[in-house]
Image 1 (cartoon, rainbow, N blue to C red):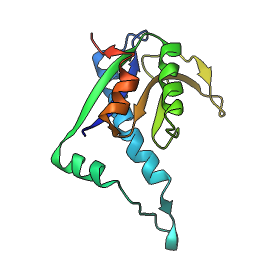
Image 2 (cartoon, one colour):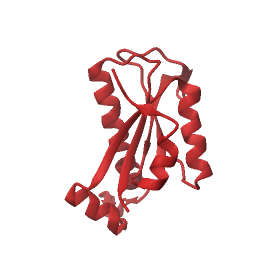
Image 3 (tube, rainbow, N blue to C red):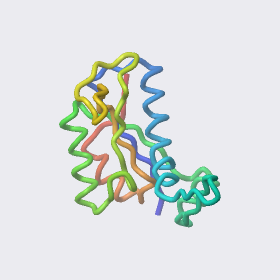
Image 4 (cartoon, helix red, strand yellow):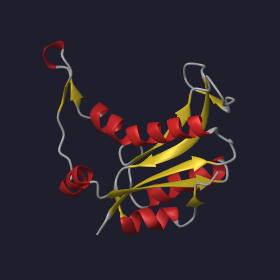
Length: 147
């Protein structure tokens, strides 16, 4: 069975090509950042990271066999439906998938305020490498991202 990284980005934000690329990069990094954050220790005042990685994910990345798919969500509500589907599959937020929230320093207008009083806009969602069947069950509700 194949594996797939799924990224879903809001279409209603009308991101420029550069901003879209940056948001996909944030999505791609999201899985690895959370994996590191959840497994870091500060022994001797120096950060150390240690974690077990699923063999299929490890080999898939090394051999380039993990397919990447970028889909579009029409709006925030449609994006949040992907989060709901992920939770229904038993995926854990900020471990198996996560929301990408922009700091709104360039193109985007804040839609909400975080705990520090900073404006934010929810742009997309990332998923860890999923079995194709699970990824397709989520992505079939979305179309591929198009300009």
